[in-house]
Length: 115
Image 1 (tube, rainbow, N blue to C red):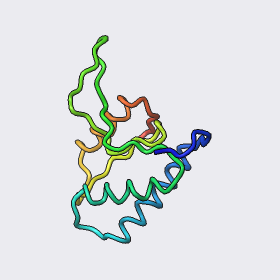
Image 2: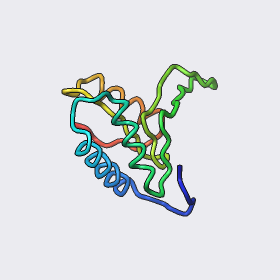
Image 3: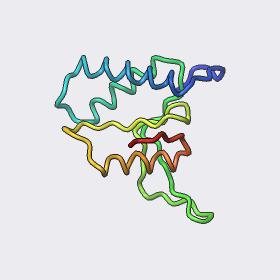
């Protein structure tokens, strides 16, 4: 969790931290482990910085005025503006893109053109 509330970090700076942490974890562990191993190590790496890192963040669906818990969980929500979803797979499929777009929409985080 964030150590002090005065830090305002940009999405670009978060991206850099995530990239560096991911690179460090992958270099240390290599390929072939379950997603949970990479998630635990990445959580450890990200928590070395003065940023808010929420892990396995429940993301409810709001329908009319009802909050529905339908099982959506973000791997990481960083500084309430950066969604990080971990995959330990050989290749990404359309379902993975749909998953992250759903999480971005429900979390009210920015989206970029993914074409």
